[in-house]
Length: 203
Length: 151
Image (cartoon, rainbow over all chains, first blue to last red; front, side, top):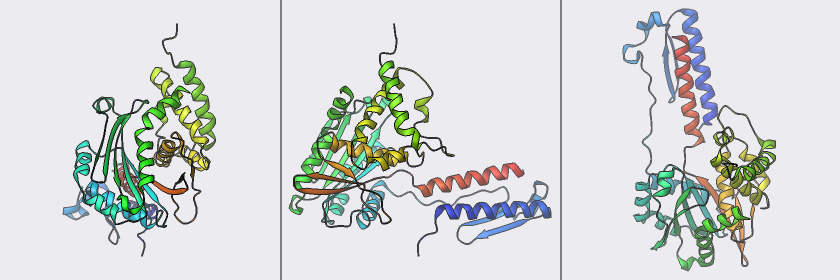
């Protein structure tokens, strides 16, 4: 069964909370509502706060999930996109943009081979491209332009003529899968982007 | 003497941006990511107007871009739509023919490029906060606000 739509669930929580507020005010007493597995809510008028179970009094808590490591988020994204949008036999590329991965996490990714193995299991996928856009002037200034290739992974860093910079990791599928031309063309488009963008601005 | 060398080009760019985006502009509870660029007139913004207009002009030449450009006006859709344009421009500016794939009831890739006799399908996505994360945060803020109202 599909997960409930987040918008519908949000509306249900709001409606339930509003009912509880109204009941607590009308009755000048405690109101309790529960949405199974999602929401547990006690409310009482301020003067009758003692009616709320002690351990929940003045307490507001949201249970959180442990954030997934970036590598796992990428692997999940690759799975979901190759299952849905890129599930035909045609050669394909998955491009993933991000603005919040830390440079350290990015460096870790470039040393990790698990994603290269993942890409290798998907025959029609020529490459997965991760693009980290950098906008803070200090971080942009610290970017050292480079293009490095190591074991099916290409790492690119460059500044752009619009004052931003980007770091790019490309996990390439092995040459024997028949994607060599696509990968060569992709890499030319990625490395040539700063110059091509500068030319566009000069036109 | 003007202290803003890009003022004239910037204002021209601003007209292009308005002409392109205004028909699709949506007022929402979320501030549009471009909002900060529009309310201060100074050299850095003039340069941004000029460059952003150039990007829009080039993007409109890519077949199928109408659907993507329309989404630039929607605050919640802007980041994803701009990523799609940005990635398409990398091929377009390299002389590789590309076109956006129309959206359909079943999931489709975003872009198709042609090189040699070969076609390649491209999906463009993001790792940033999901719509679900945003809705959860908004719901939590709403609850806190309601509690403060009744306190």
